[in-house]
Image 1 (cartoon, protein in one colour):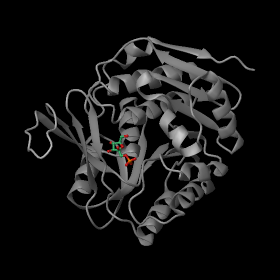
Image 2 (tube, rainbow, N blue to C red):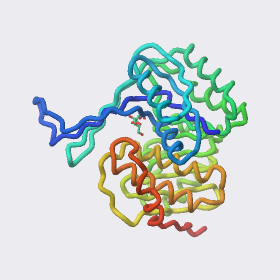
Image 3 (cartoon, protein in one colour):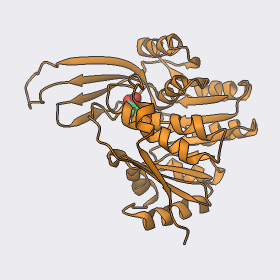
Image 4 (cartoon, rainbow, N blue to C red):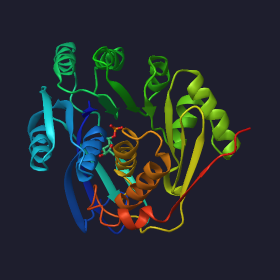
Length: 310
Ligand SMILES: O=P(O)(O)OC[C@@]1(O)O[C@H](CO)[C@@H](O)[C@@H]1O
């Protein structure tokens, strides 16, 4: 069974408007409020593919209650650790041309809440794979993610990491099963720029060298991705344009789609990459996760090739 951990969930408020004007109030055209956070998005997307998971995380206040209730309403299992404060609201604004995001810090953690979460991991039934995604709330301890990984790995679970912080580099030596950086994160965290296939070969060799078992590297709006298992590297590219509405949850759903195919069938990389890119593209065409209605159609229009070995 997959478990996801969202240490810092959020209600996403997604607003559309005709442009922001300095020092003036504007009226938005629409606003939607959705339960989110990177690990939760993975759980929601897994559910859409018929794959069960349990969503773990810290939740607080009315926003935390809203997220947990909505998660359960969607039929997802959830084991919340309740904390003080208020789970954050993140604001995304689309002015018709560009997207703007204001990501808030979240409700602070204490060592006691962290201990509570470790206990949840220690006693979780059928813990095969823990997907740890997203930022950390204020005042989480320096070793929080090390502890999370250790508690999961002691149970024999695989750990998948989707983190935007430098901590990802430190955790590499714990041999995560998979990481899912995008090209910006690869540059910022590991100082590995990605301009062409040769850069990708170099980057993948480095990542495997420091302990990471598999890498799914997404290329954002380019609509492409690379996957490396330490032996081969695959490149996937879509051949169609999308009408971008919000790219906010696309990366999380790309990861979920990849996992739902690849985790059980490690040889089926091509199929997993097709589903992953198709899902990411379709999610970007709506606010939140959307309905995945075009995923099958899009999957047929993704080309996958293996990079030549040098
Ligand atoms: O602050 P984090 O945890 O890095 O990112 C949080 C967040 O941007 O991630 C999701 C999209 O990936 C959103 O639903 C959510 O608001």
